[in-house]
Image (cartoon, rainbow over all chains, first blue to last red; front, top):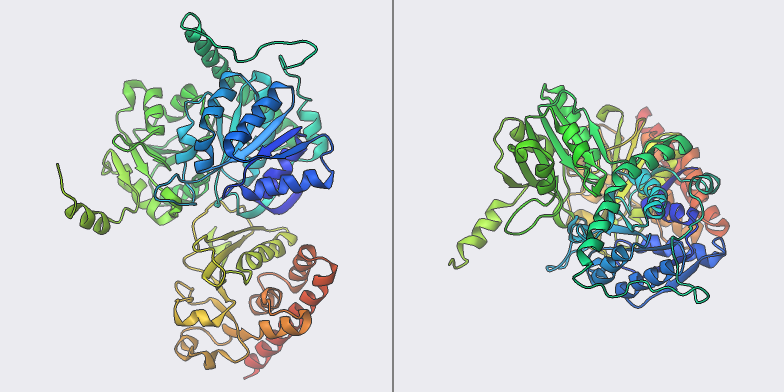
Length: 395
Length: 197
């Protein structure tokens, strides 16, 4: 149903339509509106077969999700920032056990200094945890991705993170076609676990594995996650056929076909980027955008195909690795022949700093003219950092 | 696309409902079958601190997610902000300013501002008083949105009323609707007399 709705409310409605059987969460900004809405839905009786479990921490939230999923329940949780770090050990366990848990990340910076606003530092930490990671461009996609995420998770028996930019999306009020219950029921079959903990038919899940087989376990998890490269587009296509709109998938190219310069990015900045690219195109610059919707597994072949014609590639990142630079950049370079020579990194929007069209136009024009350093921090206040550097002892 | 997009910035203090105002305005546009995007600024979230929310309205899908720096209209819920904040920053030359005050803009120290904008573009409405009378609480949102519809014509009064009705329960809806209607009529008659003057 078409509604003018807050992103968090739309996601909560989409998750509820997936009929989760256990929802466990600990509140943290900017995730709170999602789980508040879901707890109200459960309390109202609208989700009769669902138990909402208030836990004492994020570590407990993921642990309860693991237990619920292992016992055969469709399990959901959501968190952000420090909350995701606090559950880190259990996040890896969920993936290692192959449990199809779906988790929303309301992307937020990590302290210190403490900062509640948006960037991708939190989910990037979990890039190697063995979860599929999907990034939403807008609230329509955020809602739809949750429906697709449950289908994907249960098809492959792998956990899926749906990442949506905190505040920028979670607290934005906009038009969303909220997935209807009937359509979701037709699209998403009831969860049938591959194996489950059942006292009547005991099995052991998660026993110790020694050096003789640990590599093989990890290898099989890798192969299984790579299957998402086929499953994600198939599920997105099925979703498009059922719901009449195209969301999800591996990558989203925009005006890349004849582009000399392409900017690669994840999440909600893609909309602003498309407006900036249209404006630069009006000025005669052949630029394009490649949105990466599925970041794990990394869709190397799709990225390579979309970037094939571009001479210059800019990877715009909302997180970075101190001492090295871009995180997504390393993936993009790895996907390109010649290790992606000519690929540069722009770090932008850290800790909630707005990414404006004006700044994007400038940095893309600079990139197009070959004037960008390998690593640029967008809108960096040079006076501030140089003053601080001048009074910092070196060596 | 920019030409068909109308951008509003709402200034208030934490607790006065700037976010709700932006959301209601977006719903009014949605009711008309248009696209709208409402979002808060997330500065300080303390009660009483200056806060800002934004609303874009367009006939086509809205993709950008940057703060609004050159609004077509500003709404000021609390004129005590005028001393510390340039609420007019970036307001377009042909823009609108709607302020919650029981006195004309000329009595708010805005004489210079009034000269910069076309006649009838900088307008006050006693939204808190209207709310106090109709609701028993000085929450200015509904009245300001009624006045906004009258001032700009960007959304219709009927759409604003539909948004208010959809947001508030039966008890609160009536008072808010009455405040919005009276504010709409006040600004309409002011605009009428300004046009005649």
